[in-house]
Structure formats: structure tokens, C-alpha cells
Image (cartoon, chains in turn yellow, blue):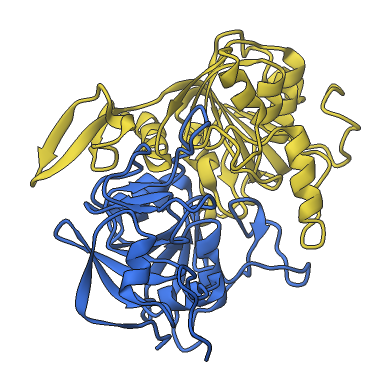
Length: 253
Length: 230
């Protein structure tokens, strides 16, 4: 019998060891961030992590400010934790990301680590990041893209012309673990998303172990075959979010 | 009308009027990506007689304007910065890789983004401000390189008064030779064959006045005219 359900977030991340390479899904929103997996990782204390993520993320303090600035429009849930928490706790050694720093005078936790020389960054355009991850899932070792030549991201990489247009060779990014957020899952690990699917769908299957944090578990057969976004073969573990949020990320869950 | 004092310049356009200048080009059926910040003003002024599909990099195609009150908010329907936008009939949610297939594959008609510097070659710098340890490329590199038309919507000068339209970018490039048109608070300029052609000036401005706050030599179009919104 196939059952990819894992009972707790702490159990789901228990084998993410120091030095692991992670894909971290989500896109700067409480509604598509794998917040409980991030909290569990914060509790586990795994260090020296290398992580791909679209954005280094604001960190808890800046997130609070953003939430109050938007309070008239949308209510953010309490249980929102993002990669900035892991940066603040000093668990990230390297990010591969398209957006490493705050804008204007806003400084993010990862940026503080960068400035202190305690972390490193590989900046990549968001499209090349997405395709490098998709390529890993699809078994493509590398690909040429027209995006990047003439800029810092192409430094040291092979450039080749196709029909007179320079392209840069970008390599696939296969991780040890992919941490993603979806809406509904069944025990096979089939996933349905809600809203923009962001890197959550892109990263599924681009790692040795893909762990999906979901809002709801449904019986096998409830998800219509022609409505499933991610087939369960890309997913190894599924954990369901609690209906009542804990008081803080430090609470075991 | 009083004479303009020597050394003083006419008033500049505000962001809403700049947006109205930009959206003149949004044709019925256009697929358009708006950068965060000043280009988002365009979403508010798209003429209602045109169906324009707005695209956002994280997987959203065909959304409406930014919502500024809680009415009608679907928290799952947001753009970068977590700002909820109006869901629209026909809207599609996508993954990041699909969203960038749309960009890289040349399916975006017009991309509108902010700029820190644009130079005579059409090179664009808008991702790495001085003092920051690394660039925030976001999706700008993909969009500027692969959209059919790249429009830069920015204030003509930086907050310290320094020019943003320059001979050569001194900040790290987001993408080389990608800019087609620059819309600022004083002018509309096109990039043509290594030149910046001044096409339109804000009401009250002369080409000479625009040149006086520009860091590159402008080629004044033979038919240079005052900006109009039609």
C-alpha cells in the first residue's frame, strides 16, 4: 500500500542534516509558503544549508511590518514563517536566488549575514532558476538560454550563439530535499495547488526527497485525474497543516 | 502666463499620467508584464475598451488592478509584495517554470519596468543599487531580454538629481541592448541604432530643457511633439 503521509513536520524534516541542499518553495506569501516545514527546520537546527529560493525573504520583523501595512486589505495568518527565519537563525550557508536583499533602506536577515561574510549568494535570474530546477526534475543536465549573456550571471559560463543570438549554458539544480506547499493531497502524493503555483510545482520532483505541506488530505480518488497538478511520483512525503496554529514556531508540530 | 524664471523647469508629470502615456501602447489582446513599483500604476488606467492580459512572474496571467480595500480580496490572488489583485474571468494560475516559458518563449508583448540607468545602447541597469551586497534580478533579466517590447517607466532623474538616461551605464547591467522605449516624467524617448531619440516632451517642456537634465546626447526627432494621452 502506498501512503506518503508523515505524522508530523518534525518527523518530515528529521533527516535533513547539516550541509544539505534544499529547494524551498513559495513566493513571499503566507498562502503558498511551506511555513510549517520551515518552522520544523528552524527547530531541528540543521546548519550550513544551501538553498534555492526565489527570494531570501524579509525575515519575521519585516514581515510583521508588511502585514500591518496591508492590514486594511488582507489578514495574514499567524502561522507564517519564511526562509528569512532560517537566515536569522544562522542556518543558511548559501542561497541560490533571484532576490537576495531588501529594497531601499530595508535590510533582510540574509543580507546581514552576507554583509558580515557569514553566508554566500549565487544570484540568478528567476527564469533561469526555475528552468534549472525544472530541468533537474526532467532529467536534463543543462540547457542554453538567451537570458544572461552580457551580465554578471554569465561570468565563467559557456556562451554559444544560436541563430546569431548569444546563449549561456545553465546547469540543472538537483537538491537533496524539496520543501513545497500545496492545497490538497491524497495518500499517493498527488497534489493540487491553489493560487499561483510558483516554485512549489516547479520544485516537486527536482530532489531526492520532495516533502509537501498541504492544507487538506483527501481520500484516494477524490482528486480528479485531469485536475491533478503534480503527480505523486514526484512526491515522497506529505504532511498536513494543523487546523489550530501553534503559539510560535518553536512549538513542536 | 508668467515667464518661466531662468533655471527653473516646468512641472513634471505624475505617475498616473506617466502610466496613461505607457498604456497608449497596450493594444486589445496584448499580454503585458508590469514591474513592481511605478509601472503598477498602469493597471489602474488601462482603457476599458481593451482586454489586456496582465502577467506576473510567480504564475498569474490575466489579473486585474491592485486592491486597496478588503472588498473582493482572494488572498490567494496576489502579486509580489503580497498585494492582493482583482481576480478576473479568464485568469490562469501557473507554475514558475511555465510562467517563464511564457516570458522566455516570447509570448509577452510588452514588459514595463522601472530603471536606475538606461544608456544609448539600450542597456538597462535596474537591479543592483549601490551599497547593496548583491543584485535583485527577480524576473527582470528574462523579461527585458525576451519580451517583444521593453518599456522603461521611470523618473527622468534620480532622487539626488543625477541623470538616469546616460551615455554608458555605470551600474551592473540587468540586460544588454534590450530597451525599446523610455517613458519618464518629462519625455518619451526611443532607442534606435545606438541613439536615444526624443519623441515627445511633457507639456511646457522644450527639448533643450529635457536635454539639460539628461546624461546622454538626445537626438531630437524631426516631429518632436508635446505628450498627448491619445
